[in-house]
Length: 241
Image (spheres, one colour):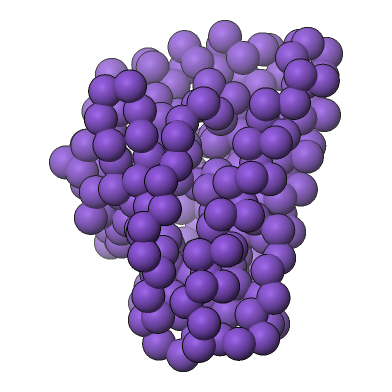
């Protein structure tokens, strides 16, 4: 499992290695939820319902025996992908991960960044999530950070340790959506922002976009060749860190 120190030191161009960290995989999946009405934005309970509903929906797909055969894996990925595309707020996450650097992007570049970044995250986590669907989730308290933001505390219980995870949510169009998650106190948004800042310090937005294009092409090629190829590639990237 990954520790806070491992997350902090995780370089962007080794991002495929995230697949080797089960807690990070679980983190992203727990944010993929069905819409839960947020007509009462002052209700922290609704944020907790949002996270709990996400777990139920994702685990239902992952544990469905209909997807045990290899021939059904693509359909399983499609269903999980639908949750990601519909419910994961990539616009918000992209804006926060780029931070002030987004001012250097043209509107067209920003649109492509959101598309590429979301596709990259989707490929990395969806190709690996099946291995971690037996994790037990314990729910803690939910608090309001502001009138339209909330934080939900949970723990992922594994055979070897308990991993504290906090989900930060924002209300968009009357619904809760995840925009950040803290694993053992480490923000994924801040982690990605640090990686992007390092790249953009010496390079132009187009260079970052090209790196994202290449990474996505590699993931798509590995997925087409089979899950074993993806797994070995993730381990190789992890060893480069």
